[in-house]
Image 1 (cartoon, one colour):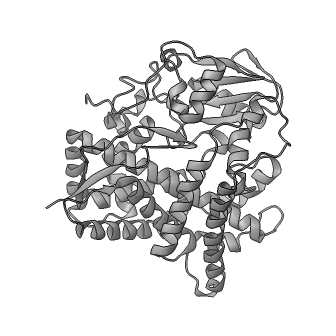
Image 2 (cartoon, rainbow, N blue to C red):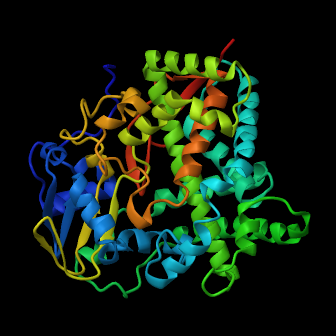
Length: 456
């Protein structure tokens, strides 16, 4: 087993007061959890006028997100209000009939059955990144987070829009998404003070400017796609434009189309970029893992580019990514608002309460994982599947609201790692500071400086 323990925020030794918790959570949600939180299986806490219930075991996660899904299908006020300027009524934050209708339309489009269309585009974009890196001066570091954001933006644009995003559009949309993440509030204080959900939330002008920047790019590229429909070019946006609700026969209107494109872009760009950046950091700190990765790639690929058919032959590459998102789950808090009175493991959960599954806690729970803070990709190899506990690993959520693009993201990550790791190694800059920060998604700070070393 490996001895590398990646960084995590200091854990309070004693419980924090409600105000101390709120103050700390606004800076970094990951820092509020005391040591005992990684051992408890279900617990609740009072935050001002609201009660929060934390499901931190396989049975309580299943109870809230699977068995009683209808009672807990609504995303948290923070997620809904925080992302509304960007996503509108998009699938990620909608609920009720809107969510069910959009799910019927969108889920088939990002289904695993379409991966043969899109996997070559993923590999092509990764190869172009490798070529660009090959021409960099050896002494010039790159920001691995920005590099992965640019790569995944290019991939998601080619697969969603069927065209190259181009340097100008790529820089614009990556910067706008990053700015939105930086500006959006970490807590919906109005909810904790007991204000009703229908009261509008204030967003700074900068938030709306960032959202408009993203909308402009999306609308322009959607317009380009409409003009090229007759070309027969395969893309998710073409599938969305042609999709009809299987129950009503209705298409998506222009605003719904833009909102669902924003959801797909955010889910396929931001979270995968963060996770790939974490993967490169972890590999740089674990030479024996990197060596085993290179051995697998040499045996399975022999220096050629990977294809979709190669993914099953790369179990260690996949295990590296799965261990990465165990330690640093892309969305480290999954919160739902109870729509009606409910019971979880004998505890009464009143309507309006927040029910939270915290992958940051669950993935490091001392009951479900051996050496939970250690980096051990081997735990995700097929021969070790029997040791993993169902519903204790939820990087893409679980139940009916599981991420529709989970297979897309996992395949993208494996193909990108396989393509790039054959060509380069990434080494952490000596003065780089790596610290996990939660801003809706979990990022390794803002500047993950690494040196690119070409492999022979």
